[in-house]
Amino acid sequence: MKEFHTWDIALDPVLPAREVAVAYLNECGFSMFEPHDHGVLAHGEVGEVQTDEAEACLETIRAFATVTCEKRIVAQENWNAQWESEYPQVVVEDDEGRALCTIRAPFHVAPSSGLDVVVAPQMSFGTGHHATTYLMTRTLMALDVKGKPVLDMGCGTGVLALVAALQGASSVLGIDIEADAVANSMDNVALNPGLGKGKGNLEFRQGDGSALDEVPDEAWEVICANIHKNVLTADMNRYARTLSQGGSLLLSGFFEGDVRDLQKVVERHGLRVLAVDHREGWACMHCGKPSA
Image (tube, rainbow, N blue to C red; front, side):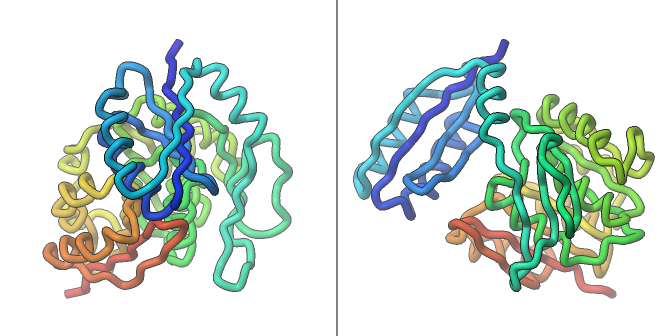
């Protein structure tokens, strides 16, 4: 059974210390983060987390913020049980506060309005609770994806792929480097009656950073990539190459302070930044590829 480091980190002031802590700890093997009012919960698999380096990162943050950290190791079974008992649904709203989409667990009541997306709470990133997934969902729902092919890089639990499929995308491919994420995404397809088990237009694959090399050029009208800034930068050439003219590239997984740097990368590859949205210190960028 897998075990996970769970560090509950309190920061004063919370911002920008929380942004720095997440960025640093992500490089030390922590892979899941839950922001809260006083700081952030960081989760990482035992054996993956470099605890000495993580401690050094927190010490660096103490130069400009007060930092306290409670640490524990939790078995996956117990971690999941606690998460499920406290698991809230997420309602993604438009600017007027109208419900666009509800991301919920199977034990929640179906919403009366908006898109209904069912996701079983497991370890994979992307349940909708994180600000980046919320932003990506809201941006994706503002697009007309009906009859269009959609690629979801770093699919996590498959939320964005599910949203695209439920909105009528002609085909959806979700890719993640984590085997657990791919398995979780496949399980979640069966939880959504609007798709049905084994729906032909929705597929998930396990890949690595070179997974896009197998995708034909000019193949995708919408690409979603909710990944770390460094990965987005490294893969931008492949995103630009595989995005059809007039298509949309949605990017998140980075902080507000990274927008300017990432915009330069986007524009260097012939794309345009059409809009930027923000939530809890995180950013989402809607980019477009000009038509010929």
